[in-house]
Image (cartoon, rainbow, N blue to C red; front, side):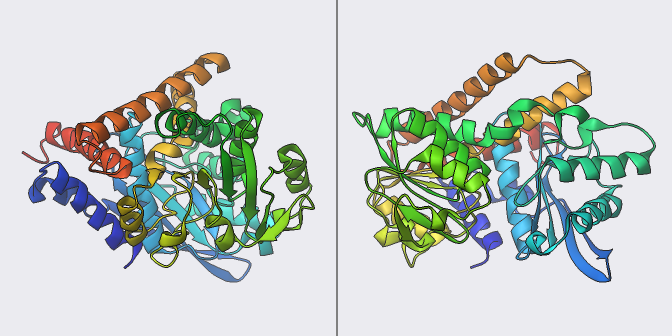
Length: 409
């Protein structure tokens, strides 16, 4: 089943649990805008997309990824998730996503700059602070956002820093953005532990995906005294049941080395890491890491989806039957888009917001989101999953906006 069809099935499940009519659900079954272009760079034609799934709550919002496996199906699914994530986070955005199909690891910095600028040119009429606001995603960063901003402003003939977030501080970005996804994930993980791992002062944790978010998350949890016993990147992982030296591992990774070659433990594959006997499994890599093929072998009683869509529909059902607690992506990794909202608001108003104030606000919003999801979960006597609870809350807010706009009755 494609990711798009899985999303529709999850929507139907949530709608049925809350008695939402088929007529109302129609507004969430298809994206409102699909834009495609082929970027011509150095004699190569690179497929590129920008998709807005829903904008009842505000302009489109979602990242741009550079990856050799990008497809329209994937971008549409990510835009769908962003719609729900932004709604659940209670921020004034619809959901969008973008991508370019190529391998940035095989491209020079000069070529990546040209691809970034070509993307801005291709979709300049679709982007804007009141239309659709991109941000970094897989294999994109603040420098790439800066190229896109610069090219967009050349075309428009005026400054508009609010058209993109995740920028360098000098161009209107904010310092908090760097570890915001990890910070948000860390906050809800701590709340999850209080609720579902009572008495576990030192949990054993495996982190699949030791990129920015996974690395920061591991560092924060290790600083609290928890044992990071396994970690991995795209080339493989390392396992030490007594706990990895996280500071040394992060320094090793920052030096350009693979986690798989770290000398502080035993080599494991990404697939093996998923099945280790740990208390918490943090999924911070890519989609579809847990499927029907391996779901029965997952030993962790608690899973945190720091990545988008790491558990497919069939696996979700298997894990639910086994009473595995899964903190869903639309809650666990929403710290990044919440801080993007802070950046956008600052760009729009011209105000300079204090970082300590913003950290406190992120803390409050993440804990509020967690509390609302748990309350819905308990309202249904725990007979639904945390994901279904989150979907119900997100869907109902979007549908309320659609109703006020007169698009549904």
